[in-house]
Length: 484
Image 1 (cartoon, rainbow, N blue to C red):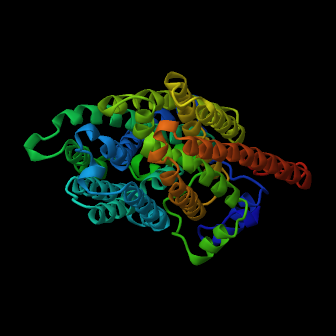
Image 2 (cartoon, rainbow, N blue to C red; image 1 turned 90 degrees about the vertical axis):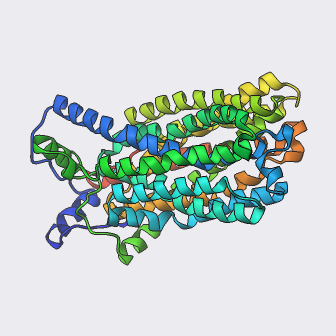
Image 3 (tube, one colour; image 1 turned 180 degrees about the horizontal axis):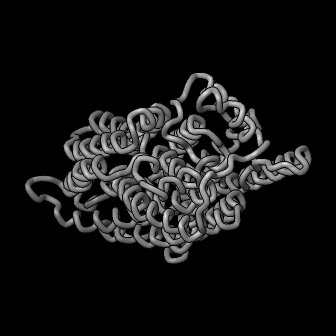
């Protein structure tokens, strides 16, 4: 497996690390500790890192997706964002797409800077930036300004999610990551739920101080990110070897001696980049993430419009976005725990993608006026689409073995998927199909999720085949197998 990884660390350790990464042996922890001590350490890390990381992503996602709420907020009074910026449907979609282009472009450099500048500093900088830019959206008057500010927002937010996934590899073993990623990603579903509720409340501020409600929406939701950036700078721990003391520190280092990223490892070189870019199996992960990003993107941006198309008008349409996200939150957590527990991330992703695809397909096939049934299908579709993502990310990071390669691989995965993969999601829900129930959007999302299911199963069986080869070629030896 030497071709699947990148050697790093000091020259005298290259041979030893080469053996580890090629599956010849494992580095053995030099300290003895009990399961109870390990559980206590993990619990401490969880209480310190995960709520804070989830809160950061909650604010990020709230500021990213609120344009979907602003688009239709108080549309019955013609005080919605699209009307007041004099934008056509096509222009508004262009503004959404421009965000994703910036998102794709800045993923990789942001992850490199996270390692160089320390996670707390870089994430705090990004947080203040996107908060200020979101507040700036409240002042745009036309399409050009809206598109320009959305590009800046995409650049600022690009590094956060891949950065947080990368950050977790410094703290957790491979079989612990999917659940933690789920708690962070699930905060996006909470943001979707709260976003609808917040928009419902702010919608009643229409005309306050001479500003339309959608402008207040951006101002009110951007301000907490700016304020919270200072807290992140002060309290987000960077690395376990710096944050922990005594035996806790020794246990953390021993736990991650083989599987985790290391703060003291050198930053990425051109050789690291070349090796990771030529690791062709990773492109299977990138392609699967591309497919799932289409429904993720379209649901994030158009759930208020979809619920409006289900017969719910104006502010009530905002409120009806809450249940799909709430169900998706619970589903994500349970599925991610199960995926790590049974070392079956690929099959869990495939199963949830299949369920989500069936939900979208049923919604497309039902009569346009079957509002209640189609709303139930939306809940099933959202739960499936969101729940298959955390195991995918845990699967990727558990099969990349060095600090430099993990940072680049995660950035490429999220950049290609969440950046380029989300662009089609901007266009598939067409406003002129609202009365027909948005069949194009539902069919495209169903097809994408079926592709996720097929790709996940294929990659899982390929990894199983490679594991059997590794065991057959190394009888009686310890080998590092691919995680499934």
